[in-house]
Image (tube, rainbow, N blue to C red; front, side, top):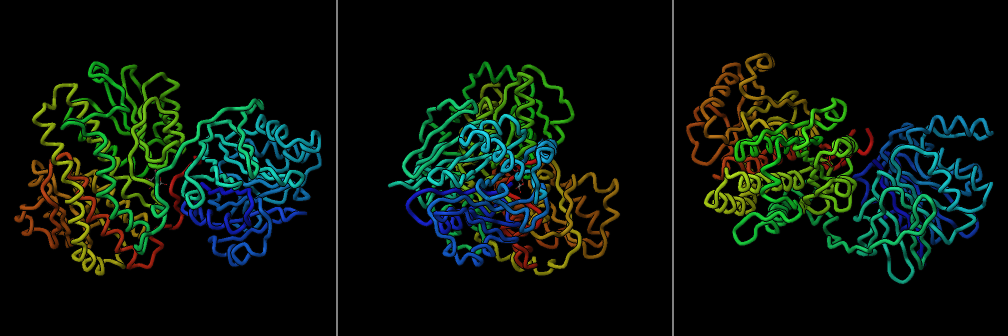
Amino acid sequence: MCGIVDYIGKKQAAPILLEGLSKLEYRGYDSAGIAVFDGEEIRVEKATGRLKVLSELTHDGETMPGSVGIGHTRWATHGEPNQVNAHPHYNKNKSIVVVHNGIIENYLSLRQRLIQKGYEFSTETDTEVVAQYLDYYYQKNHDPLTSIIKVLHRVEGAYALGILFKDHPDTLYAVRKDAPLIVGKGKEGNNLIASDATALLKHTRDVYYLENNEIAVLTADSIGFFNVDGDPVEKEESRIDWDESAAEKGGYEHFMLKEMYEQPKTIRDTLNPRIKDGNVVIEELGMTDEEIRNVGRIHIVACGSAYHTGVTGKYVFEGMCRIPVEVDLASEFRYRDPILGEKDLVIVISQSGETADSLEALRITKAAGIMTLGIVNVVGSSIAREADKVMYTWAGPEIAVATTKAYSAQLIALYLLAIRFGQALGTVDAKATASMISELKRLPDQIELLLNNKEKIQNFVNHYLAAQHIFFIGRGIDYAIAMEGSLKLKEISYIHSEAYAAGELKHGTISLIEEGTLVNAIVTQDALFAKTVSNMVEVKSRGAFVMAVTNEGNTEIENTADLVIYIPQTNRFFTDSLAIIPLQLFAYYVSVGRGCDVDKPRNLAKSVTVE
Ligand code: BG6
């Protein structure tokens, strides 16, 4: 996944491109580049590494005069991260320059065809094929739009493109197919294109969301849209109501910590619009009680942390509604030819709404004629627009690669859906609904409390900064919490960690437990309390140090655990929302203690839009 920013207007383009790219670095940060028309030539500067290398190289853009340009920050897919493979890519005489997010799947065959026509390639990237093919058609018709359309009919895959032609320096071109791209309508003759809104907020809140197979044509004073047949397309303008600071750190050391502290607000923002007159009302669901009762089975499909909310969702739906739920990793679901019943509902959960495996799982389901519901955080993203129904989590922009607030918002969305289904199925009556709504409304304050009592964890982690292996155990919903706790630690501290269903430990993995091994036990399900404590005793007797996360009042656990983190009492279906907080803090302080890049951990990206 990469980040694109393009600008055309009255101001100097380079500083605007660099500033915008700095907001998109979470999308990829192994190399970057910008191209600016200086009145005579298109100048291109590229650099390996973080954006600041390019900023220093160009003196924050000062060495690249010109008021139209395109920029890119990269997460390599084709061609290793280096200066040559960094974007923008161009034709032989740099008269056509291109930035690209996505993958041109048939680039090798197109490249071969162009080589037979005498073209030479200087990079390993798929993107260079687009620049060279544009050159091939432009030589024939000298019309940018026609050339772009010709190329679009040949390339296959996912692509968000920003294109600049030297012969047409007063125009910017952009194309979108299966990769996000937004057009920003600036004020007084300044227009922009970007991969997401965070790069635009400084300049405008008025945007157009490009649909698949749409082309945008921007001048300083106009914005036009065309489909891939060259027909003009009318588009509706939207307004973004995120405030710019949402994209800034707000005084926290890391975006991850800031986003952890935004969880109370995120939960209120996701919960409150769906509580009306003491009842759960999910307008966007658009299903009658009858339709809900007709749902035979629910499939939850997702990747990463979103998958873990799906696992919790299974326990909540099955426990609250007695409706069967299957949970699948999207990368498995899409190739296992899943058995979907015509009355099934497939819920695809995704923060970005762009994760390739989840998007494809959605498309496979739709192609089978099965109803789909997307639980998504990014408005206007592919999954949001392609799902039959979409339920937004209102977490705002999430910058840190390791998700926290979007994860918490996804849990709230699942709880609300389960209550709604339970009401229709008659397993949740008005009294239970009222009690659960009041429990949900207490979560934000309870989370604030847990976040503010972080000292205990902060001091504790210092003992484990050099740990090689850390285990998380739990039963039922606690197992789902353990999975997310373990992933958070792995993502940002690079410590090997595993999550296990506590009852499964003795069937093998307990062999890994030795003197001093840290085991984090999640024990919030009262019905499983004794069972999980006995598993804690099993690892203790092999020398493990046990940290337990449990409900207030469960003090007898202190007989077994070496350290206990108490969470406030809440409904047994909602404990994930509280128990995850100390685990997020644990992972965060271990990462900080080990000097890791908390917000941009190695080898990861915020959303993987390639397979
Ligand atoms: C990974 C992110 O790339 O994708 C994780 O680092 C995330 O945080 C996972 O959970 C799935 O992403 P999404 O956007 O589909 O929820």
